[in-house]
Image 1 (cartoon, rainbow, N blue to C red):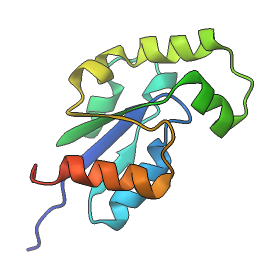
Image 2 (image 1 turned 60 degrees about the vertical axis):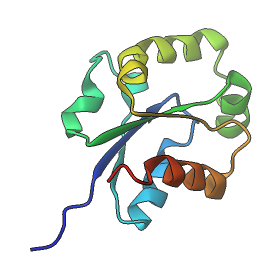
Image 3 (image 1 turned 90 degrees about the horizontal axis):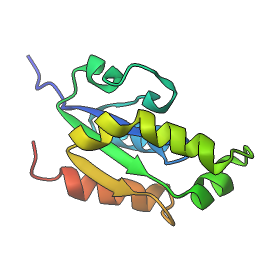
Image 4 (image 1 turned 45 degrees about the horizontal axis):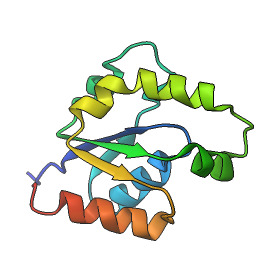
Length: 117
């Protein structure tokens, strides 16, 4: 029987890079999942996936506006951050994705995960 890959759950505001990071970590052999915790009223939703490790991605309002082009106002992102409070507090790894393209974000996450498993 093979070794089970670590389950990594990724949370953060919309546009922080959760989906891109999850896809990259899957390609590296992790059981990675982006969780849309920022849209949920269930504070512990991110724990329902039974993660071995939680990564919290932060991104500034300006970065989100550039990536998503949604026209969201700062108050909407502030609400997302409020909903992410427990995930942010419980996260094992915190990464700021401002100014990082997918390769660099994946590299930083890989470095942070190295030696943990």
